[in-house]
Image (tube, rainbow, N blue to C red; front, side):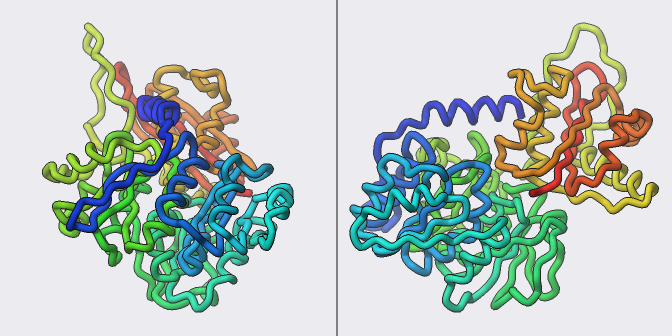
Length: 464
């Protein structure tokens, strides 16, 4: 996972694409190429340039990582209005965005969520342009404000309140079919009175609880959920879009464009497209499918090669690669079970300790699990609550867009199994205090150490 994190930084550094490149193959209608700029704002502009010469309505969302959750419901409104989704940092209008809005001849700009009054003020000198703020006191109020603009929603996707990747996996379908995307509360439940039409629950049961009559589209992580969405929903596959799974903001900007052709958005993980390992997804993909790479993901040609290659079995979420063995024989290791299974055992044993103390269970969070895996790989190399770069352990949450009011971390190394590490933490006053606090969520990262046992990380947080 540490290598994965470093690779992501490299991609962001090198993703300096000057203009959209999107070519159609003669006679097929399939499009291939890359839509990208030197950052997420420029990538959204490139997507807009590829899809719209004019647009009476524009959706303007905050590019700030911590505020992306405000825009999870914007895709359906963009689809209804045939509107591009542009991004700007919340406190100022980004260079080029104002000029693009003018060039589109927009008459209305919806400012979603955290986009500030200062941005609205910068737009007021565009003649004939009206701005309207769609926002509330929190992410749920903002989601309701956005969905209130929909005229006759035909269906509903219910996503976890922090599940940005899950929402963006269904965003293009929501835009094409006018499905509202609503947020579950922090306990994973949804207001039944707001559900309309065909209802899908997106993500695992730790993110959204079962809803009577609803179909669940979910898996063990964001990539498995992405595969479940693509396999189950009625997408067209002349062309498909590919966005980075670590922070899939480009999928938000592309959702309205993908909706025009009924296209799916695949999430990539480094040099992999995990959904391509799903047999049901493979069956739907034609041999000549066009590939539209968003932002700094791998080259379209590399994705096309993966599509052409035989499907590989689905693997569990990646962990730190094994280190070289030492010259002396290490102590006997436990059986080679999945580290994800060990992580879930630690999670269950932790909740058992809470139950013994009369406390409610923690909920599992897939995005928090990714942060915990990053931290476990770091702890394996550098046993400290400070990260190897000197930053706080909680920057791992920030980098994945988790928004939290409070957070905690427990670390351990050298234990051979889940029961041993939980017992060790419960015997330590500081670690025990974290386990018994009133956080909302817990995820556990586990990495097999080269010399002895595992490195374990518990990450806790409560949402705002």
